[in-house]
Image (tube, rainbow, N blue to C red; front, top):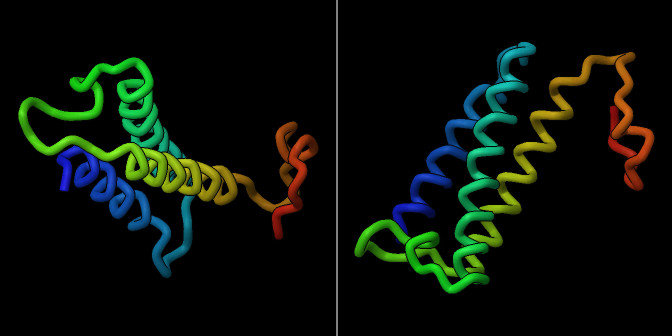
Length: 108
């Protein structure tokens, strides 16, 4: 397993910790969103490395490199965590501009 994959999956696990059975606090949303943005940025850097032919972008030193399909999957995991963080950060009765532009209706 690539170290990039291992770090991203470990960060995803850490992002899921605040979403346990206890009451979700406002800072949990910020923590989940921040970790998710780190995961997405690592996946984007790896994908750009593949697109531009820069092996140093999708691998660390001489260790195993992250596969392209794994980078896509990690990016989707990060995007999903970002959406979860966004949703738990919105309290009942709050509205965001993105909510009115979204083609999907999220359950409240």
